[in-house]
Length: 484
Image (cartoon, rainbow, N blue to C red; front, side):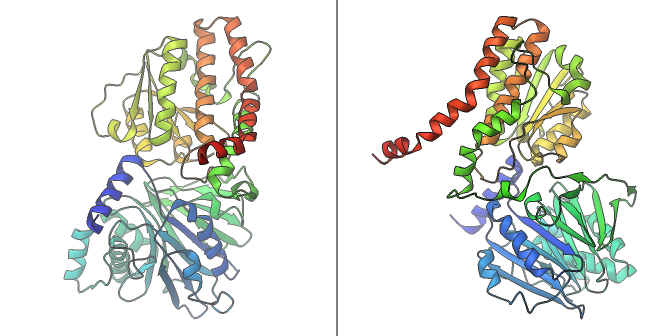
């Protein structure tokens, strides 16, 4: 397969599934940050990437950039962590979308003066138009990336007004596409500016330090106190303060949220790889999904996160389930459940198809969106469309505080814990359990599931974790059969 065809297929994959395979880290504080950035990049390796890089702003306000095609460990060989000192920096793992995977196209990218350094997740759709505009202003480029164009555009506006925040805002107002970015400016070394549109980004608050990432896995070793950016927002970060605004310069107040899991939960824990670990975590994960939600004596189910929309759910004329990938397959099971046990007409939509057509939605419809990460781009876009059309929206999400969890009218968390493996395992089974619980809650209210059947079903649900444990304990038998 040619490189251009490969990149085209990858762009289509991003648009159809919402996959985000790049990772961002950043730090501003009082510690030497290089080791923190490298550690953060290693925690993002599970996302897949073809190159990695860091930019460190040292005490002389020099931006030191190291980037390398290949793995983070190959990047580490380019410098001495103990020698390269700096309290502010950004880092990135990249999967090529514009330009082939090589050292030059890796992030961070800078403008031609080296004043602005940018790491970027997403795709800038109009980068060729912007590049032509900048070339007329005597900017020149060394990479094939859309990110270098963005760095140059920020520098262009910085030259015009000599204000870092304004330069980023003006540049982003010209951009069409998706981005999660972190930006350094050696002329204003006391801050990092981050911004988001369609690509997850958050920052964690420590003592006299702030750490940035596209994924909580890179933050949790420093702090559990995080703030999530929403689409169309940017933040100016200093070591001891932050300010969030919209791209149109409106002030935003955002509460700090607490990450509800520990670093041990995102380590391999002695397993060969994350997928195997997460397969073996399914019994506990499923118990966490139904714990406190089922009364096993009566068979009644209560989902507290849906209390505000109970009547809307019980009186729904139709249920529409929207998801991508594995979550979509969970939705297909949900369709059978809702129609069989609740007698509610149900449709399952692939989010990337739903968002680009003209669906017929009414205020009597309930739309259920399913997403492990809560950040799936197409699912989020479909959710916005469903809300615009007046449907009641429900989220079945794993990641607490994620974009989808915040955007829906009501929701229920699956409580599967972090899922690092790319192939979904425990999140899928917990999504199924959540759909079963919702089915039982609706069926009880509508009288479509008799009480004696409720007790039978919930009794079976209670023993599922142990049944899975029994299967997992026989893994050596299955391995023997597979090898035969």
